[in-house]
Image (tube, rainbow, N blue to C red; front, side):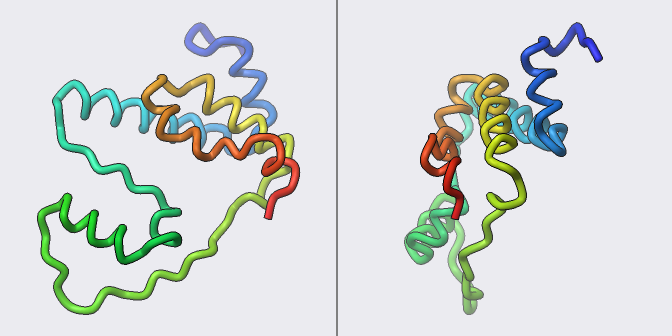
Length: 126
């Protein structure tokens, strides 16, 4: 249905994405977090899931340094590999990325554009 808060183009994208509300909340949360930390000049550490898979020890060390905490005890093993790409069709993934692109403020999109797998990744998910 029509909304005075959401334009027609975004509403059309909603129709193409299962659980579109979750994508909407995800972007709104990131927009708010980015804007708030900037406005309040809060120190920020951006951590992506993929960082654990590519270099767990470095990621762990950087996170603990940012939090100004010591590592106490043994750190549980990180087991990478969880992927949700096959939960959605190619068209749904493209629509979700377009929705994220349209709803993200520029600063948020800079953080999230790494997930824009672009044409090849969207067409050939792992």
